[in-house]
Length: 285
Image (tube, rainbow, N blue to C red; front, side):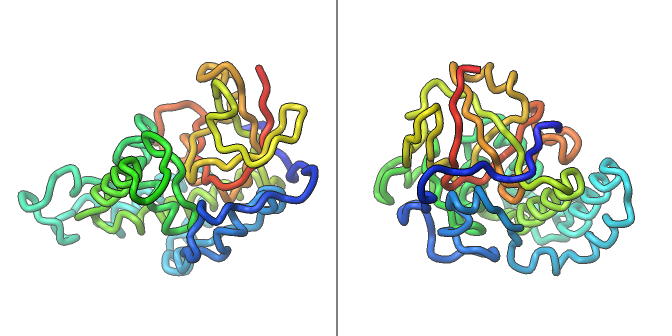
């Protein structure tokens, strides 16, 4: 990962705030949505911490600190997840085979990540977007279509899919909390001097995104969906659209990425990024 950046780019004019219809009044982290979803946060990020997660799993992070290699830490993290959430002993977790749908019983953080990679508009994608809403207070803007109004058919379908994705699972939201927290731990180790990564997304036109402001020179302020796929490879992004959207993404807004754990995502150099207001550049290559 050699596309790092040490500070956010300067912005012309006053920073764009997060529209009121894109955020919730409460969340479960150390900053409210109106701040963490703003352009000011993109330019000047600070760490995001989910309520109590690091403290509750302090034993895990003490053990990780003793391991020098990323591969060893990844193995230790997965071992901890299996033991803490009884992923290999679901009957002990209270999930009775035969009485609960098998797909729900087996739903876990890895299946959610892989499901996102195959289809971000599927049930796993809805589940992850609902998790972002709960933890960060950023409302989803798109799921198999624009989400316009709580009474719309698209929104009702999104809520139904997200609810089904969580129903009768084994503390799935808590698993995702720990996945995000572990990802942040690894990013800080990998990029101790950086605050951002330059990430790319192939698009066919800029109006695929909600434009907050057009700055000129190929730069725009946009409202991204609350969860998005990017790549660290400019060449890879070019395969998915006629234009490339370039964003300086704060490290705390990276949920997970393909190299975090073995065989986690199918896409090489894929990063799953928490949304909000971003200043981005558009280029043909």
